[in-house]
Amino acid sequence: MAAALQEAITKDPSKAADLTAKVQAVTTKYQGTTTLADACKAYDEVAAAIKG
Image 1 (cartoon, rainbow, N blue to C red):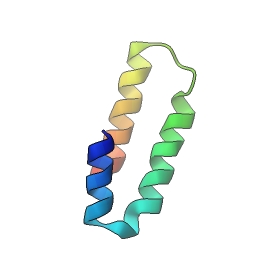
Image 2 (image 1 turned 180 degrees about the horizontal axis):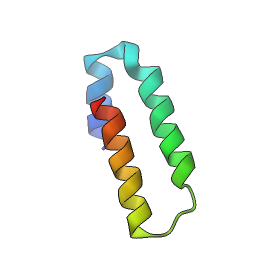
Image 3 (image 1 turned 45 degrees about the horizontal axis):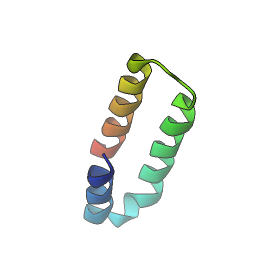
Image 4 (image 1 turned 90 degrees about the vertical axis):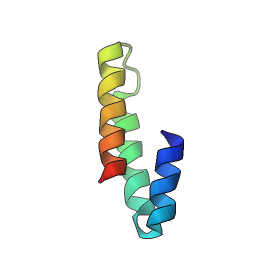
């Protein structure tokens, strides 16, 4: 995931702040969750943000 984020930022540096904010929002949203389902949702949301 980190590699995909880095690649997206490298491709379009102008999106760095937006992508970082989106990833941070997902991290905050799912912080403290303990279920595998929530972990999968968080992963999917981060992946969607990176893909645009």
